[in-house]
Image (tube, rainbow, N blue to C red):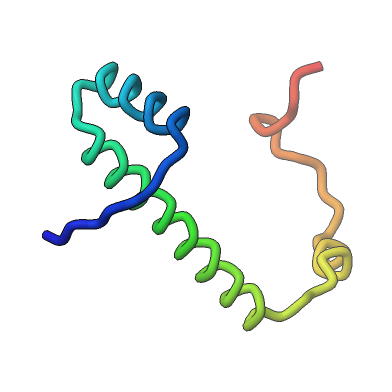
Length: 80
């Protein structure tokens, strides 16, 4: 495990202390958890953007137009 010193505005530090106390954890645990969540969100966003760039744009209207018009089965009808 490594040590990281950070500078926080007093208001954020006090808020973190209150939240950590409410959660029954240390400020270190709160900050570590918050940072892990943020890193995970940023990684997921980057991954999804990379996937989207590799994807192909399709005309969804053309795909839907290929579906034949048909009445729903009796059990699939929406009650009126």
